[in-house]
Image (cartoon, rainbow, N blue to C red; front, side):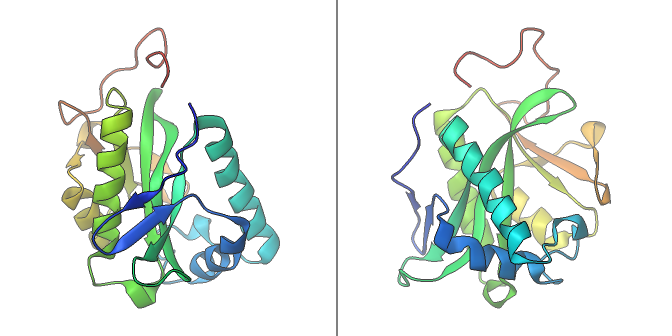
Length: 191
């Protein structure tokens, strides 16, 4: 798959491939205990850890042509305010697109996470409609649950996983609103 270099534009946001210049924001976001309150295993302690995370995200873009995106306000071409997007993953052996969204706390409460998540889900649904889109949410993370529901995902309790920080709730968007059993031959061709 060729990389998506055009980005995604919403009424208030631009979502684009992360670049090396975003590492400082990646570190600031993942160093903030409020931003990682529900997922403390995501906390980054230093610039080297942020560089490693950036390299992991960039590898996803190089291999799959898409991944998590840097998000900035449409009317502010400089500052990245968070990250949101889809990357290939697996849940219970099923190939999925994992929906991720995390924003600097100074931008919380304005619906920006939901706007970015909706745009990401629409993008993934149009380009890879055969892959379910999932969000793994810690039970106490009410704000994250609201974002997933706004993006059209539904709770799928029969498939709840346990992540590095403990039990998680699974939210899924596929044509049937559920996580299907894995196909014996792996993912569909080209996905």
